[in-house]
Amino acid sequence: MKKLMMILLVGTLGYGTSVMMTEKEETNGYNIGDVATDFSLKGIDGKKHTLSEIEGAKGYVVVFTCNHCPFAKMYEDRIIALQAEFGPKGYPIIAINPNDPIAEPDDSFAKMKERAKEKGFNFLYLLDDGQKIYPQYGATKTPHVFLLNEKRVVQYIGAIDDNARDEAAVKEKFLANAINALIKGEKISPAVTKAIGCSIKTK
Image 1 (spheres, one colour):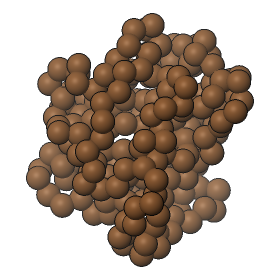
Image 2 (spheres, rainbow, N blue to C red):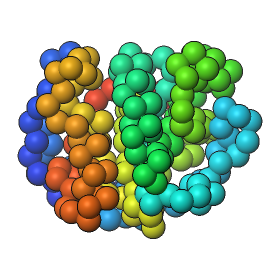
Image 3 (tube, one colour):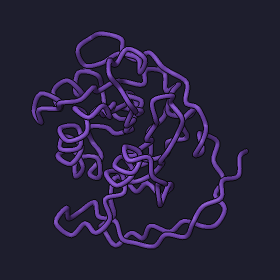
Image 4 (tube, helix red, strand yellow):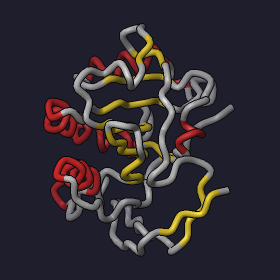
């Protein structure tokens, strides 16, 4: 089990939930500086997609999310906006549904297609069929974000921002700030925040 040194970060993420990082956090997945392996997952278009196939990518925003989770729903419009802002700059959103559809029927592949059409998703929405990818990343919540650079080196892990419930009350746009820092070649701070959301559903 890896040890990850982290800064102490305190904030709020809606529902009165605090974002508190201890000095040491254990993870079974990727840490900052690790190289993420590529994957091949089926998208809602019925085709298999990989990171390496994305032309012009200067980085990748991998977001583990789903259909049913209230937190995931709160962030859908924000994820759409992030894709509209950063996708054209070479930092596309790749959304992955990690939930087992038997454990959570609302996260079935058919429901994924329905939700994407209903909301007008402008990003790839993939199914982690067999739940093989999210454990590699160490994702534990929906949503849970992993920002990778062009070489798939992990640059940021955690939350999208500091207030799930009220976008107007957001004070820290963690993910947007991290992408902008990566674009400018600046140090990302904080590089790790605590993802707040629903637990990933398994059989």
